[in-house]
Length: 156
Image (cartoon, rainbow, N blue to C red; front, side):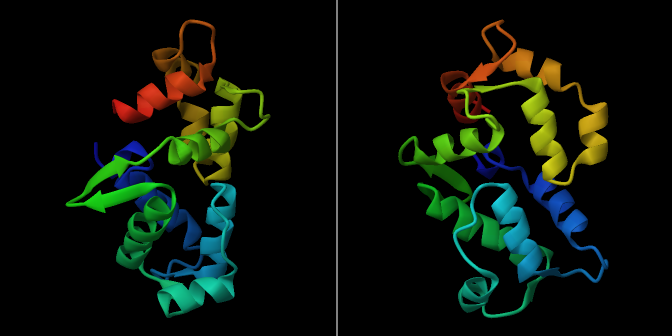
């Protein structure tokens, strides 16, 4: 399984482009904190992030490296030659909880659309058929529960 099982590199690039409001090729630590908070991974303030990364902003390569080195590794994963090994369910539970907006234990098409929009994919969320995306992985009840989500993550 590769890193795309969590967020693909292409999605990270699109996220970076949306975060880079002034199109200078850099994402500030404030913007980075904002997206980490939206993903449910807000563990550091901008000042703490500056101590971690050693600068006020990140270019695309640094942003990708930060995600793979910091976000994935801190969520119960180890990276080795671009392979992600999930040590336990903690990382998958946290990812599931990002999408389970109302906390009922299920991900609906509406929740998927909401998260996509919060992540900056407004246009894509309008054109993607979120219901179809849910149906591909659910047990025909119209929702994705944790086990279905876990199977999707582990078998992508």
